[in-house]
Image 1 (cartoon, one colour):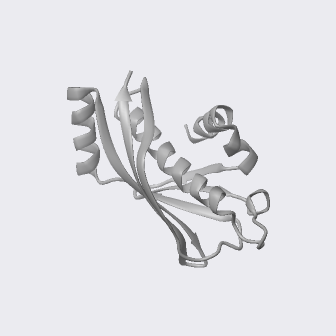
Image 2: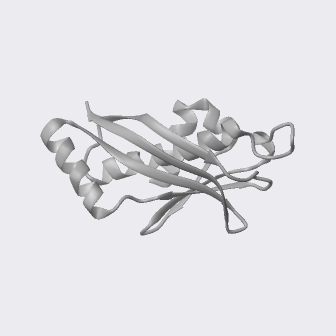
Length: 147
């Protein structure tokens, strides 16, 4: 499923292919993506803010996509409606993004909204970590609509 998702974002969002975003893995608490520094570098030799912002935003969107599928909603539209990004420290190595999986309670509330109203929203948090330090912190609200 993760490889198919990577192919989907590369096909439907060409920037992600240029950035070389990879869908790496998912465990019980987190979803991980990455991108190499070189195609995402700025004039200072660090991660370009636009690339960093894209990685955290796409990672959170991808987690929404996977969770909607897990809940049985295959035909839906997902869009970000609000976000907040903090750039805390420069990224000087390949970018590793950790996106936190929402709690079972949050996912259950989303599932009920989607069943009852054909639309629901969920908050997702991502961060780019380098050498055990949070360099970029992201909080986004995504709306999911059943088509």
